[in-house]
Image 1 (cartoon, rainbow, N blue to C red):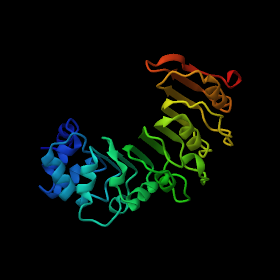
Image 2: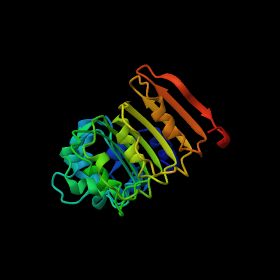
Image 3: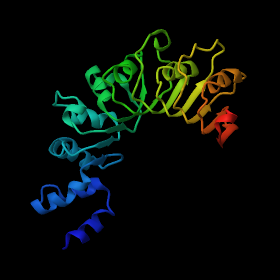
Length: 271
């Protein structure tokens, strides 16, 4: 069968099924399926496919992988169960990494967390975050290369608001779900080149605003959801007053997300 026809058929299938079916069959097929080795998505994969990828395929194609999406932390542990390398050592060309299901961050060793700093893009949903060490390890350090970060953590981040940090000079796109508004402010205050923010917080405490040193010279898109009703609109207004370059703004407040401002395109004079 001509290669062009094979590619048309394979393009209609999930890439993991193509790799599972044709990997190791012949040199010709090995050449054909290389295009499917760059982005691996094991979300909701059959257990037999996951086992094959973790034990055989991923180590074999590790130099090809640029994006890796795992369904859960158990899959991550299976990949590294007999390995001492970090994720960026095993997959040196990896740019994006994601674990879909929520997991206990204590199941990761610190050297694994520190290796995330070398990624371009990272997406995690975590629980049991007992300190701010993770953020210091992946963001607020000279070695961090993360540009796109998507983190969900509903708990209060202990010590986050009391520690001095290095600025994160790489992160430009932040999508975050947090329990407390002040944790969000403290993170944002250390991101001077941020361009895009999409944040969901549970509540705003009744306290004075942080002294924000960040002037948000590059922030053009801001999406904000507050899940509990508040009367502390002034705290939100204080933050928005610093964002003078906004081009798009959406603010949704209270549990049923009634719209306060939603999706307006803004001119710089109107902010």
